Amino acid sequence: MTKIDKTDIQNINLIIKETNLKGVSKVKIKKNNYEIEITSDSILQGNQISQVIDRPNEKNEKSESVEEIDNENIVKSPMVGVAYLSADPNSAPYIKIGQHVKAGDTLLLIEAMKTFNEIKAPRSGIIKKIVVLNSQPVEYGDTLIIFE
Amino acid sequence: MFKKILIANRGEIALRVLRACRELGIKTVAIHSDVDESAMHVRMADESICVGPASAQSSYLNIPAIITAATLTDADAIHPGYGFLSENQRFAEIIEEHNIKFIGPSSEHIKMMGNKIDAKKIMDDSGVPTVKGINDLSNKEKINDFIKNVKYPIIVKAASGGGGKGMRVVTEDDDLEKSIKEAKIEAKKSFNDENVYLEKFLTSPKHIEIQVLCDSHGNVVTLGERDCSIQRKHQKLIEESPSSVLNETERDKISDLCRKAMKKINYEGVGTLEFLYENNEFYFMEMNTRLQVEHPVTEMVTGIDLVKEQILVATGEKLQINQSDISLNGNSIECRINAEHPESFIPSPGKITQYHQPGGLGVRVDSAVYDGYSIPSNYDSMIGKLITYGSNRQEALKKMTRALEEYVIMGINTNIQLHQKIIKSDEFTKGNYDINFMSKFN
Image (tube, rainbow over the protein chains, first blue to last red):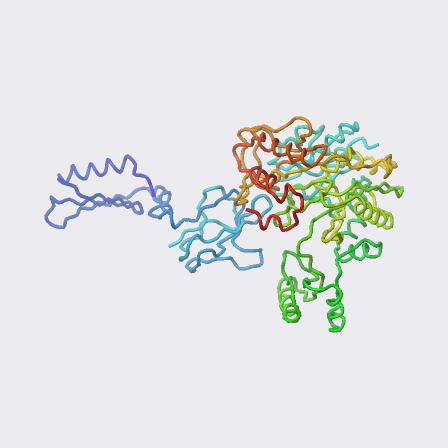
């Protein structure tokens, strides 16, 4: 989850001040294409007021991939090493995006200290994203795979 | 005598060789990859050369770079250590072609023992016992005779096999045909060779190996045995010498056969013949044509510096030791300290934030790590060997228990706790464990 930064608070305050809102019951921030949504009981019509602020693209990209992903859906690297998406260079990769895997299925290999360690699916589900690239060095805690 | 030796290895074994060179008055050249720049073997060597990037393939296995390093530094011999290029026939050959001495056997001997079927045949011819087997499966009668002779269980193995693929253990007649068929399919799929053969299956053997030392004048000595039955996934974890199950007659008998075989093939250098041992019988498995990781336990009980002897015979000197000079005194145990989690076995490279190694009488640590050292993820997880010596097995065990308690390695996971559990287990204390020990251990 991306952190709320100072500008967010300033923007929220600005909206509340400009619109003279009272009794704010809900604030929602969405980071892709930056959106702030404020719900207030004092507004009779529409119930909601939204403002879309365009931010520089760079900022959007940064916060992308990380947003709104439940930790349970992320498979992280348990070790430092080199990731491999298939058993050997001539084989097909273990998994594809959109594929349904069962808990315990091999997702990829990590080579560390001369051993090839199978990274297994922690649960059954559909592969949303393969973050790691083939033969890419990974560190402990790096995101490898994201489940839907 | 050599003036300068290039050590084509890293870690504790590079240090081990370097120490022997120092004592013999030989200058040393260390090779290293770029991540190993601050490794201890580099710091302690007289000269060092970076031979490539982190991946072993481009550095410690990079034959042209290593030969160039040897030529540039004017080294007159190369010590390969163990692992990496130590049993690479081509490497030994190229070194020979460059008029540099390869500290080890000739490339021919490496080739001879590298082929498991050839090696088994050589041993058969020399009277060294091997596992009974049958290669020709076309004649049903012959198969039946074989089984009548060796009795179940037997194992079907793929001729080009490895890694457990194409293997089936058979315990009764009813399963035989089906198992052979299945093994063939699997062997064809895995190795593109459907040839399989039958062997007597040993259910609970010990792994016992015999150390040999040979000069170029036909002199051969054996230095007793090592029991290496504590293994996990074919990786040795704990070794000891002597084995608690062998008596002198048995030891002499198998040692004698090994010496005869070595003389017959004119072997030169140090080597190890590995056997399975079950019901008081030895069965040859393979020969390692190099220095072994676990050589220190032999050094501790014989008082002979194997690396120095290895270098001396490589210079062409005659062995100064006779078989009658060699006796096994006391007991020695070695624990391999690995950078891995003691339960999950997940590799654990990284920085050592605190390091204290045990010492005292009868305690030896062969390791190249130090306080603040970062263990790279590119190489083997073995970061040290803890060896203890006592006048009897019980004393060696007590010292090991004490030394393991004293060993502090912080910042990474190590298997020290696992060793502590094994050392104090009933089965290990009694000494009658076999190669299935670790698969049953938790």
